[in-house]
Amino acid sequence: MWLSDGELKQTFLPYVEQNSHWYSKSIRGASTNLLEALRVNLNKMFRKYCINTPLRMAGFLGNAFEETIWMTTLQEKSHYWYQPWGGRGILQLTHPENYATYWKFLGKTISNDFKSYQTAYGKINHMKGNDVRKEKMKVMQDANYPNLAEYHRIREDISSRKTKFPTDSSGFYWVSRSTSISKYADEPQQLEAVTVGTKSYYRSPSFWKVANVVNYGSYSSSRTQYGTSINGFPERCCGYTNCLMVLTELKFPDGKEKLEIPKGWKQRDIHGNDPK
Image (cartoon, rainbow, N blue to C red; front, side):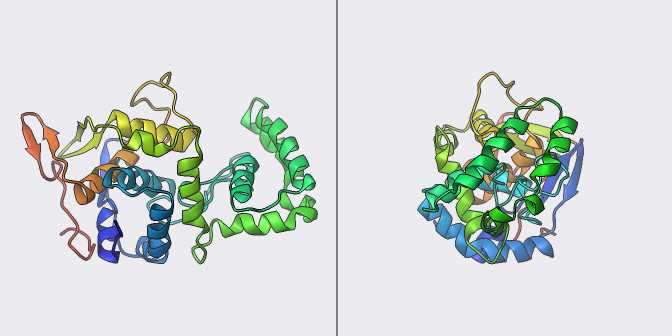
């Protein structure tokens, strides 16, 4: 599959549910610009990493829309303790270890200086308490490590829409887990409706596992299914629901009925314009 401009915009969710309220998501503005900028590299990444079925694409995009705050940013906007090693890219690479793993995959040699930095960072990561870790990270900021300037530069490339790295790093993350995320995306869909007011979104055990790996790096059955441990899981499901509607032939269960379109939803038109 190769998604055209209109097809990619159609996958972008028209609605998102947060705290029992529905909010419309417009395709105009920053989201359109980012989708347009990434489309070709996103399609190339899908082919390179075999995210090449409707279910795999839906699993990827359902998470990507939430990770990028509805396609408005390629860099995590937060003040968490681990900055400046916060999330970058479509699926948000985080922490020096994950950046270095990707760079090694690209054939880059990781210097002993960076390895030493990574070891020191790892010790902070294992400390208890975000305030403690944030205090310790003050000495780990870029300005104190001019010898690592090259790594700081290529780290920023992963959040630049002008390069392939926001998409390519995310495809690498998808396949580099101990179990490729595609394994979970390929599982049979047991769709379950979640109705909030006049609309429904859908979740499934398969997508729950996909979101687990995106968030934690691995899936664990010890996490309560559909619990609150996954950041923004309902929002991810809204993106997933819309992608299933656009990319697959699946029907949406609603009591005794099988719906073509989820309850209360409207599709974008063939050009990806907002539903009227």
